[in-house]
Image 1 (cartoon, chains in turn orange, blue):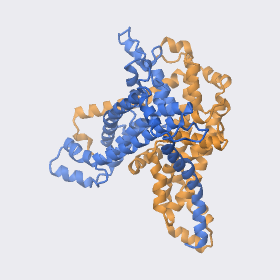
Image 2 (tube, rainbow over the protein chains, first blue to last red):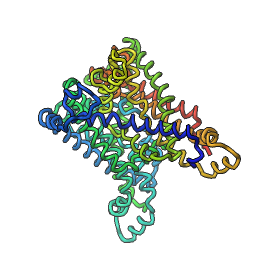
Image 3 (tube, helix red, strand yellow):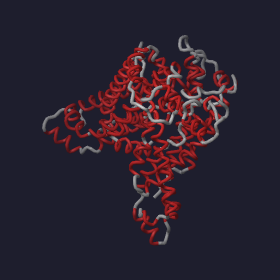
Image 4 (tube, rainbow over the protein chains, first blue to last red):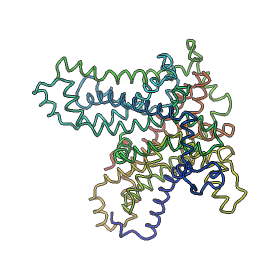
Length: 278
Length: 291
């Protein structure tokens, strides 16, 4: 729309709202990150002051004294593995939903995606019991399995459309060349589905990296603790050492932000479109 | 392509997803609905006890009442101020002012951060000693200002509200998406008829994005029904049980091995979620085409 016709008052108002949006979105994070380089004394002295000197001591301390290396590794392993498994199995199903017909297909697809209506935490007790029965309580494997199950509806939405948009002519040409079912999927369709695979992978990874509730419920030992849960314990144990708290918070929020900044457009687009469909 | 081999491949390709659907969705949901009527503690076999869990949920103390009251007010704030702010930002971004793309990108950042970390950040922001809010107020001259936000009544309710109030980027993105989909001809026709900027916004654009706003309300209210970190890691539901919600009750039932109780709370969550969706669909007539 033509911006020149807008009145001065409207432009001022619009810029004010835009500025406010930027401040509420970035200030809390910038403040946390900047403060993580200050000493605890400096934080207590003046919370707004910039650090007088950059100190990485807090980071070194939380890594060496408080097992954060373990938590970081756990988070990375669990989020990565569950995302890879999820993207793979939902790509298999998405390929079928996108390109093949079979009895009951639509009912099944609706059944898979209607699960979005049930809040994730509402299934907490049965999932807890299932993980117990599989002897996977307090294991990384248990969390990986549960996380892999979470992205189902979202991944199927994205991947079904992705495979639908790949022309069937390519499959038919491959059949004539003598390619089997698996080869057509793996060598013809999968390479062309890269953007859908990437988008669903990114969204699932972010969700898994950030997940708190199930990690809290399904693990108990430090050896299997993830960063968000560690942060919760940290909150209670070190409520007066703010530098450590800020350093720990920075470590958990930065990877998500970096990944997002690298692939902004995909993340925004998928939020916009999944909302419309959901 | 429809030979016997293909059928097998279809079955193999679907098998893992079907396993997930059954094990992590269908069985749990049935378990939730049925064990809500039993005294199950997760070990023995569940014995039917009728509506005991639901009676217990509601009458044990006033927590359920408080949780529902909080949900009502939080949903109201979410559906009006929260979605309203998200929609306002979308309309402003749509004007394409300098820097709009940057604002949209930055607005998304709080969404990609762990909700646990975000809750903790807000706990620190509202901290009395080092928090930004109280220090700012004190520096503005109110040197005696020492509200302990997450630990005082009624400040706690509002402090929890602030952790999500402005973070409506998903509403912005959905509404913006619908704004971009409005055919240019409609605006051109309106301009020819002499409509002003404000009239186009109010009488053309706003009605045409009502489905997106409806979706935004559903998503935001559902997020309130299923909220956890924003309360558990800030006020812990306190002071007393003042900021309790249903998820916190479910969590209590789970860690105390009162599975029937937990699943009664879960059932309430599911029913509320589906009702909100149906209600908003109805109110916004979201099944009807807008064009």
